[in-house]
Length: 316
Image 1: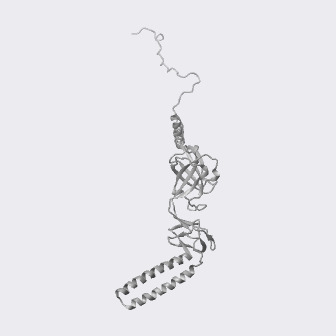
Image 2 (image 1 turned 135 degrees about the vertical axis):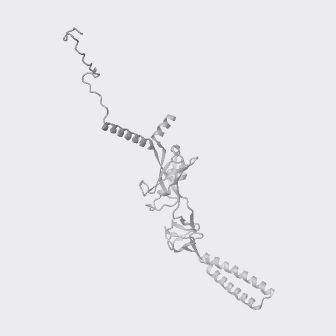
Image 3 (image 1 turned 90 degrees about the vertical axis):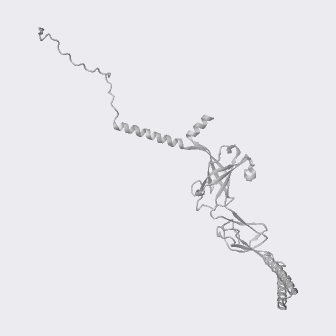
């Protein structure tokens, strides 16, 4: 039995309170709320998209150059075989023509030709009469031989007559089917022998271009580099532009003045061939696209992504 007074007995020990781990005035940490979580995810996603876009953006330089438009389609050229005067014109520039279709007639000087034709026609009539008499006379060996000789003579006269008539005028026909270009002749116009009269090109030709670039800048251009080809000087928006890529880079520089006398004094030029994307050729260009026409060209050189550009700098 415990004789200790109740008052003297030890009071029950109070439960120990956890020691405060915060210093005075410090706000206790709270787990992130749902709003903060989604804001963080959204920010990370946005930064990732921005980085992905920037990493694929191409940078580089644009080299302005002058060039010439070429056509991959076949071209049929019209040339005056003999000097003369345009007697008739049957077509007009930009017409679609069929192979063999008459385009114009050239009259040639007639001095002495008509008299020669009249004499040949008389000779033809004489031979025809002799041939008829021989055939009426029978089928002897001698008659057959004379008949063969008369037929040969008659054929020779016919050929000479045709040649004479062709020498009076010449009909120029389309050498192939396609579109008639550079054709601006009129009746009464005089043409010289060998003079170009126009050309017939494919209705939908495949175009190429050749750009001439300063030799000091050509090293920046690579096979596959993009190119923008203008149709009208100073205009670089649709439908006045076409796009393409570099397919060949010349090795030897060309004197600038041989390309164009106005380029005299410039440094030698490098010839760069460009394949034009057929889908970029406008159906209704602001001016007709013809082989040989001068065109301004922008070459997009040393083009690469920002990441590629940085890596290239480290390699160097």
